Image 1: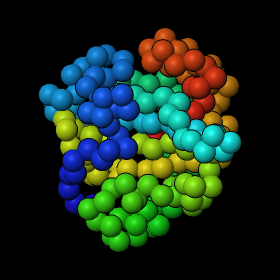
Image 2: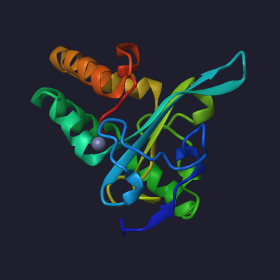
Image 3: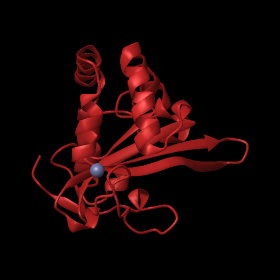
Length: 187
Ligand SMILES: [Zn+2]
């Protein structure tokens, strides 16, 4: 994919300020300096009775910290995740959506990357994308949406050792409680 960049889509702005998320959640690096790639992940939960979609949490993490987090994975977990990605990710459909709406990144985020389930049919899903400064980049991985079912499957691929380490690491550094840790995916 060519190195095209985009303004940060609204869905990836900080919910409270509607501005770019300014700092890495772990090292507090100033992401607007634009000297480091970073990833934003936002996890949504839909409460059907309230007909409302809530954000469980959102964060930005710089590549340096993200790589450190990935290094915590055991070799087994890493292999399992790489295989899952290779076998289950439907990049073809994602590319079709991108071709259809080349300048509307939010229109790419309508279906689970792995299961193809439409967003409207899911009670829990997350979106993620890579950025540099105030631009979204697509050369590493285009923005993606992953539903709760796929997140659960990926979580089950992590060894027990990795799950424990991730709970500690994420709790300590991200201030994210262990019960939400399983919602974080490492792509
Ligand atoms: Zn960082």
